[in-house]
Each structure stands twice: as structure tokens, then as C-alpha cells.
Amino acid sequence: MGVTLCHVHGRAGVTHVCAHIRAALDAHSTLPAWSSYTLPHPPDYVVVRMCEACVVQRKLPVPGRRLIDEELVLDQLDTTPTCDACFVELTSEP
Image 1 (cartoon, rainbow, N blue to C red):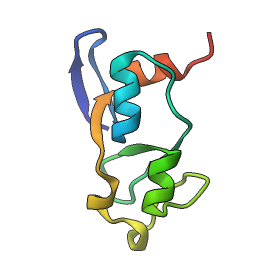
Image 2 (cartoon, one colour; image 1 turned 135 degrees about the vertical axis):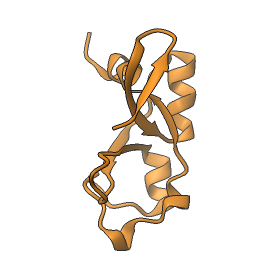
Image 3 (cartoon, helix red, strand yellow; image 1 turned 90 degrees about the vertical axis):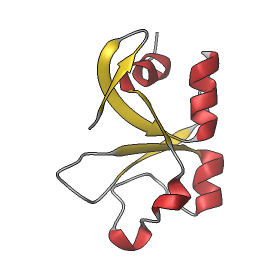
């Protein structure tokens, strides 16, 4: 997992999200339903979170899981790195 310098959390882990999730994070609004995928190439541990619309559009497996090489088309994922702590805060129950 990478590291980012968040204006709220300081040094924090990175999660990769689709544009729809990123827009909701930036607006501090409710996140759309999403699925998590991990990428199959250690030693990096990369988590990609995609909203339902992106999952359908990209024909990703449901439920989310570790992707295998045959499913991995990086240009289809089209994600943005973001602060994992911000993501966790907005997805946690109050």
C-alpha cells in the first residue's frame, strides 16, 4: 500500500477509487455502493474500490475479490489514489 500526505490526516495509507467515489469523498457526501478488488502482483498490496456503475461498465466480478491476471486490464480500472483514512471515515457507521 502506498502513502499519501492528506490535508486532514497527514501521512496516511492510499486507496484507489473510481471517479464517482472520489467525487463523493471530495463533496463529503454519501458514497455510492462499491466493491473492493485487490491486484495480483505482490509485493505491492493495492486495493481498488469501484462503484456499482463502474463495476457493471467494466464487467468486473461481483462480489469484489482478488483479480487474476486474465481479469486485470489496468486502463479499465481508471482510478485515483486517495487517503485511506478519509475513505474509512466516510464508510464507517456513526
